[in-house]
Image 1 (cartoon, one colour):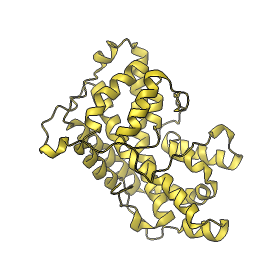
Image 2 (cartoon, one colour):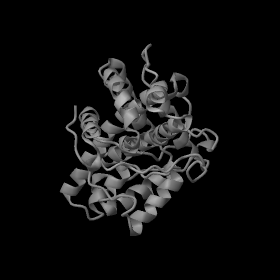
Image 3 (tube, rainbow, N blue to C red):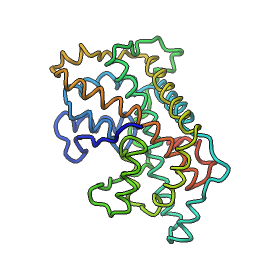
Amino acid sequence: MMKPVAFDEITESSATGKVSAIYEDMRQVLRSTQVNLIYRTLAVHENYFCAAWEALRPNASIAYFERCADNLRMRMAPPMPPDVPDIGEELEDDCGYSPQDIDAVDGVLDIYNDANPKNLILVAALKGALNGMKIGGIRPGSEADTDALPTGPPASMRAESLVDPAGVDDSLGALYEEVREATGGLGSVWRALGHHPAFLERVWPFLKEEMAKAGYHITVTQAQGAAAAAAQEFPFAVDLSRERVAALGLSESEIDMIDQKLDRFIHLIPRTNTLVLLMKAALVGEGRVRRKPFEGE
């Protein structure tokens, strides 16, 4: 288990200049209302962040990337136990949740289930390149692989605010600390779900049970491998070796910090998204777990 850490970041609301412009471009290209934590913490290293997005963008905007992300999302679904709890029904019966309230929680899960497979592939590309691997520059399997994707968030994707972990009550604060210990960090999805503490408090015991099983750990490992393989086959090269990054003006210690952050998110993202899919099963049923979020939008 990795020791949990807090990440320095440039929040979406505080971003200015080049970082703000890249954040907006990311929302368009990655088709999300959110800029995820991995990018917010890499943005602290502005020269690297700008170069990283310049290298990633051509790959993130084509059909090959979408197909790989869809395949990876399927791999992130763990084996389901025979006794998945019906948390949605509990929330309706015990907490007075309406169908609209359930949809709101499900909408949060969909945002991050859509984004996390994409993010893991992009992080794997940056990590591999920084560590001297050849990433990308591979002839596409078909001409359709380089077709441009639509841009902009899907129409039904919500824009969710993130709860400040420092301002939550003791019960939610204790749960957040358990999440950090279990996954290595507090991904944004947990902060977005902080608006629904009743859901988190009911689903967390189920998640802890599943994290203790071999199937969960096998799923995480397979997802990491699939993401790395997808990144290596990018049509466009990601040439951000340690030497290239140093030439951008970054010190050795700063490059080491970036490497540690990338490592951490390769650990964090698949664990978090496997839990997102378990949460979805408990909220709306196993039949919805393997559906692509925002299909057709």
